[in-house]
Image 1: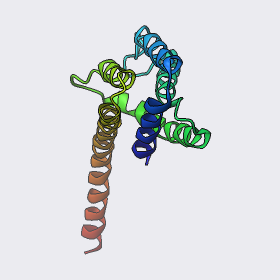
Image 2: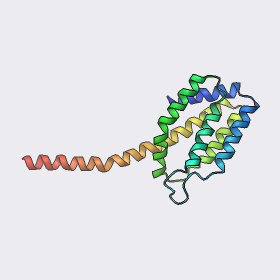
Image 3: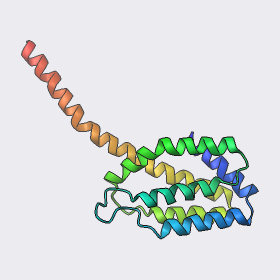
Image 4: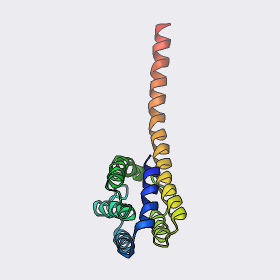
Length: 159
């Protein structure tokens, strides 16, 4: 749902946005790239100021969609997804370059390439969702083993 609504809002912003919208997207990205994403003393935690800048960047992208209801729906879904995105940092490994993902989305948007911008935004969200799913599956594995062991003990003690 989030991907559908935000890509629609992005498409509308690309269609309706003017040079002020472009400037707001570029400015929001500039501020985002100037702040470390993770806390320097605890790299498993996001930096609070980066979090605010991250939200501002995503909202700038869709700010020219010309629909307050669509904007509010996107904000609500962003807030709901944010707890999972934050959780994803605890297990983030590999070579994912989130800043470069944001730059590519920005470049496509201000170049008025709606199809590319929408694809990149969807991929950006899907990558995070996939990481969250794999982390949750890893978290569930030890619990499943514990539950299986308890079931086995109960079955064996009752026989």
